[in-house]
Image: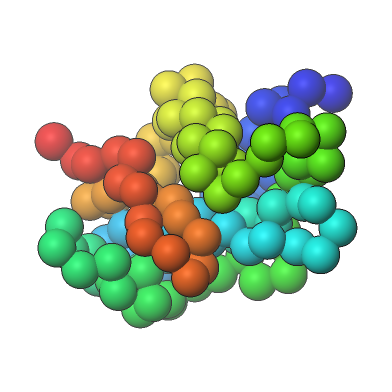
Amino acid sequence: MEIYQEFEKWLNSLLENDMPENTAAYNFNIYEEDDETYGVQLIASDEFSEEDDDWACSEIWSSEEDIFYIDHSDEKDADRERGLEFISVLISDYLEKGGKSAKLKAVNAVGAGFVDGDLKIIYRKA
């Protein structure tokens, strides 16, 4: 199965849950795992700020241990920047054609980033 289809299936199953009514934004937390994989976790936040990435720390819902894993062992020049870009493209594709993308687009913003790094805003509500 293509990675986007696996990602869409994972995200659809998460978004079937009722999210807190006061969700202001979603963030995809990215973790570097020990075995040349990235772990992706979805969180909902009751805050959003263009100026301060700490909004993503105000977590009111999380996929917790339901993590999406991406293997990057075949990329000899894999780095965090390329990893973030790859995951951002998956998220952008989902926002464009994903089964439950309207739920993500109903909030102020959708971001992604490594838990110890800067966030990238992928979607802003118009």
